[in-house]
View: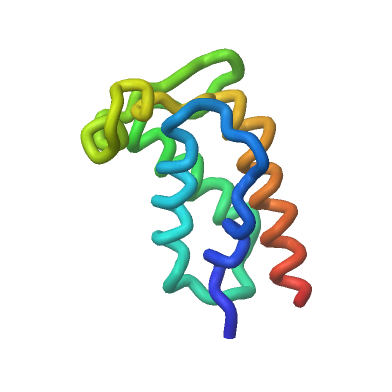
Length: 105
């Protein structure tokens, strides 16, 4: 049986900010033990909840969010920034689409 983490491969061709890949990886690791099928609406709410836990708020267009744990774990202060636009417009819709496809397989 497959797990939800398969929807995180491949990574997007382009990221919003330098911290976005670290959030992507954190989510991929979190869903390694979660089996398919999985409800897309639940995944979406969980991603938003994790985003809010890390940043203090939900992703909004045009906003950037600093995540201290990403900056401390990886070299350079700019690695701590994630993009609200990337997560709202690109990442979450991409993951929802991939999850729906994986659930059908």
